[in-house]
Image (cartoon, rainbow, N blue to C red):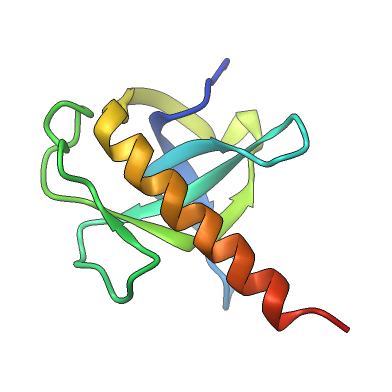
Length: 113
């Protein structure tokens, strides 16, 4: 299946602490190196300032208010994708890009040797 930046898909997302996966919505974003990664999405509220609560969740094709878990990225494997749900609204993309940049800056600052 062919996916594009800022699309939302239903996909298998791997568990971090045990084998297996769960089907959930994911956001497809650029990885900074010409590829794409998927980011976990959840119906739970934001836990910190780096997560993004989607304002235009209905426009995006989601059935309920949804949060993008910025720190929960995984390599995009096309066989994990089940079907396209929708596309993130431009207003949400603009805000999310800022949060994603902050996440990268925080990661870089904490991992300088």
